[in-house]
Image (cartoon, rainbow, N blue to C red; front, side, top):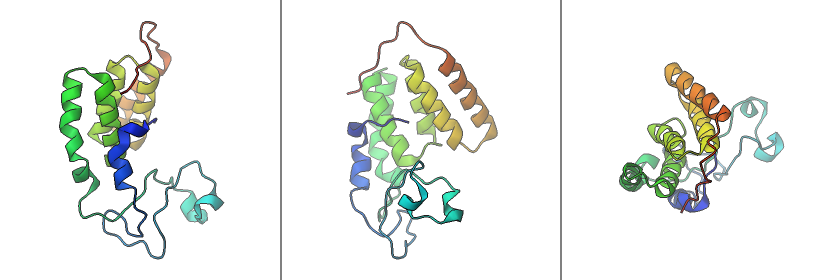
Length: 166
């Protein structure tokens, strides 16, 4: 999933501090929170053989008193208003920030995939649907999202211009 840097201002604020405590209150003994990438080699992430088999999250954790959902709550209203107004260049970055803050398996991720679809950006929509399908736990939701991703990956809209996000 592609995330525009300007769309994730809240996430940048959340992840600015490198502290050795996770956001959910768990202590991380002797380590500062580090950004890890699923594609990073094992020696770069410092994981052992058992940990390397698990995909690493693509976010940093910081000590907060409020959960990430509560911290990003102020984005929900403007995102919903922009989506209702069909203002795709405004709604999509707000939903991208919500997905980064709340996770790829939530209702915000599904809404983001729907917004990409409605905006006629089939390539981005297929990526968003496949990210949602990979993260959602419900088998029925997974199947529907994977089918939509496959459908959109094979369909192109010849009249759709590239959407410029603002």
